[in-house]
Image (cartoon, rainbow over all chains, first blue to last red):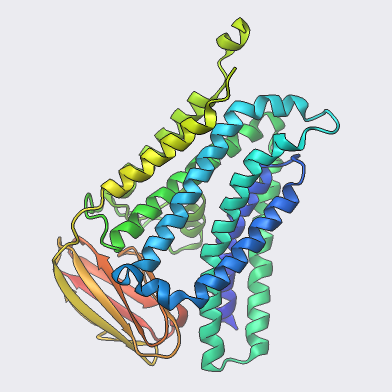
Length: 273
Length: 116
């Protein structure tokens, strides 16, 4: 039971933190609950499919199919997060000013919601596939169904509770800071995902550059500890980053900042027009 | 004002992906070794690997259940389904001890690589 609890809790928490941020980022948008739920359901269905075909995926690309799938999923999520931040940089102000207006156009909220629903779906897909495979292994080795169910449900409850805490923590911030904090959080989240993605390309043998370790902080803040895990999911903390991971991390942050800057409406241009 | 945001973002995203793929180098022809999982234990559980070199590990899962070959220190996380085989590239590692484990059966599936 404990094994099921720990693994399910860990994976639910990882996906849940991302869902918490997305919910906070979309507070006040029409239909956001439906979009997020759609993302969760699509991700769960995808997780089942990935688990079902795990062996075929694994054998694809000379045994590196799984790494390439993970890297692709992470890259797609990074692109979606970039799109979201850029979109918000352009339209965030007008949306905020319309916030009080009744019957705001649905389309205003739909654009970033599709991107974020995809991010939610991809997060659930990645973590969910692992849960399914793990639970299948437990069932196959003959652990009782009741113990498994108890452990799994407790794991889901614990993970969901901590995710809810993230959400309420974020929305409790003073209104004028929420937008900035969430934009920064999403940028860090994307940078961490990009750094993970290049590591999967490395493990697949597709990338073989800048593989040396930059530092080792595992003695102070181990990545497999509670704090290390949380930071790993949220901001991409790694206790032994490679040069390529560090470069990718910084490049993603820079790209994010640049996109946001390009997308932001120019005050001068607006004044002239 | 014309909304040129999305094409620009798409182009930038595409450029990023191409740049990432462009980094793909040659598969390293370094040392290869094999670890077998049997009864949720690694065989061998202790291996010596070259430091500062890339190497390829084949993980053979002889058990009928899936296992996740994982090591935080070596940055590996790979599910190997029952009765199948996985391949993963590791390194270059600094000299030292690097623990690995089976995430789905941590009580028994433990091992270590010694880079020297």
